[in-house]
Image (cartoon, rainbow, N blue to C red; front, side, top):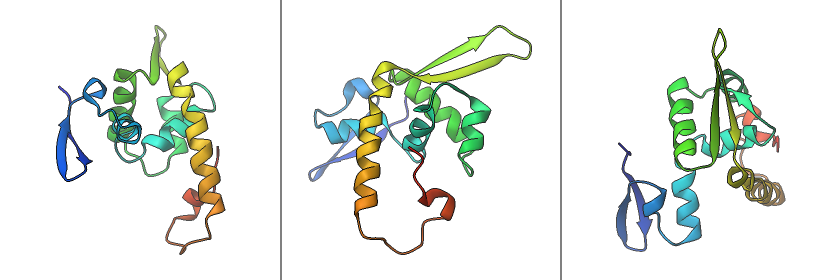
Amino acid sequence: MHRLRQLHRGTTIGLVRDVDEAPECGVARFLVLLDGPWATLIVRELLHGPLRFTQIRDRLPGISAHTLTNRLRQFERNGLVTRTAYAEIPPRVVYELTEVGGQLRTVLDAMNSWALSVPPVSSSVPEDRASPRI
């Protein structure tokens, strides 16, 4: 069952169940695909190559296992990430961006460039989040 998300579209609010029902506006569709906190940071980490769950979690201090699990499942449903489970003891699961997910590199690079071009703002951003790792 998909969690309902609200999207602001002008003065009306629409409910979207999944990417197939996403709006035609590219920006709004992007926000549906990368819904919620941590989403872009998870993608940022996966841009460096396949990672196990604990590796992703360790690279994102403060993210809960619950949130990471939900975001990875959402990405898998929407075709951005593949999940490969290896029949080993202990079991090993690896997450990797799909070709479509990998195309987000240009988006994150553009976001990074833009953010670095803007005059500095107050130091309310925690130090470990302030430096880009793209």
